[in-house]
Amino acid sequence: MTRAVRSGHGAWGSWETVLARPHPSLRPGVISYRGLRLALDRPRRRLEVPIGAATLLLGFEQPVRITRAGRPTSTLVSVYCGPTTTPAVGEHGGRLSGIEVLLTPWAAFTLFGTPQYELTDRTVDPDELPHVLGTRAVGGRRNTIAELAAALASLPTWEARFGLLDDSFVRWSGAGTPSSARVVRAWSELVRTGGAMPVRDLADDVGWSVRQLENRFREQIGLGPKVAARVLRLQRARRLLAQGRGQAETAAICGFYDQAHLSGEFRAMTGCTPREFTTARGLPPVSQPGVPTADRMTGEATSLLLTSARSSVFSKTGRVR
Image 1 (cartoon, rainbow, N blue to C red):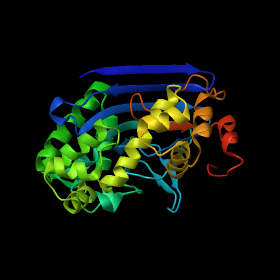
Image 2: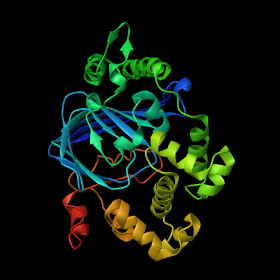
Image 3: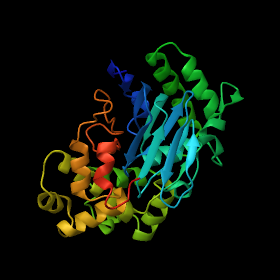
């Protein structure tokens, strides 16, 4: 198991993140594990934008508060967030520990056994899902996510925790609802092309009609192929902008009609303009200078730490509070 450990400490507290790759038999469906331990001297807020993945946070003790437009604020220790098309703001009191699991949407369908369209743009307690993976029999008895999180917290090392996750997910995957090989292929092509492959070409490639593809995508991905392509296209655009590409060049590379189209999509799915997002990403986190933004996907611009300096970037629009 490959692991990457980062840590730091200062007058503001301490932090540690441990990134690990799941067992090969779980990949590419289970993308990554990220262990978290934060002990900071003040609350922390982050803007989380849509990504081409589902997220399962197995919290050890401290809750997080998650706010999404049009949804009630959720305060949860363990959290499942399916495919999204809108931003969310997450906040904790400064202390947080647990493991964040990143999943492809079709793998989440297999593990949870729940149609993913029921979870789109929602943040839920995974133990409350109708067919939650945690209630599957493991070791001759029924288990809950809360029990799994407690078992993980009790282990002495991150390596042991990741090993328990591997064992649990291998068993649950075997007992879960298989995802369609055609859905997996279609999703992989969308990811490979950054959302640029036309839906008709995608359907032809896997041997389905457009309607068949749309129905199966909604069931196993949570979004229709056209909407999923929008999320992946904007994910690629954020990555290019974070690398220093200009807006006009980024719009052309990613297949937007023009710079205005890019800006409109950016506002719709992140709550801010491309300039606001990239400017805020570049501001130093002066209140906690050693703590990383901790993007959920390696190499992607998925998060924005909302320090007071960064929040002021959005003060005129009021979209992020």
